[in-house]
Image (cartoon, rainbow, N blue to C red; front, side, top):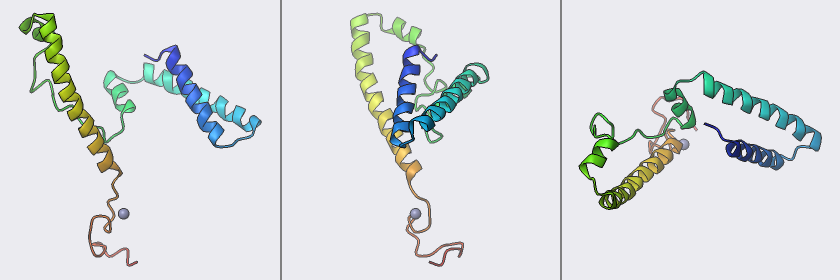
Length: 138
Ligand SMILES: [Zn+2]
């Protein structure tokens, strides 16, 4: 759910971007009004039109990696975990330690996926000596 703070932050970010584009005061006002309406429309769409799955998808870029710990492979729920390790101090110690490991794995996976998504796939960058389709003779 979008909070008031999120809205203020988004608006500040948009204002800053518009400042960078060097619009006149009048132009800036018009652009801000359009952006603000677009934001309202988008928010309404997100809250009403989309399923939870759809909401998660629109917030992430298409190259975002899948969770490497799917429920189908690791079916234990958090409630079962609490039952299995009833000592709260031990539980905190274990989950903190594992959480840090998982964070590092996830962080690496996201970074690699981002780099891969930005890599050029033209024949030159793929290390070929000529265009395999013969379309680019330069
Ligand atoms: Zn290239």
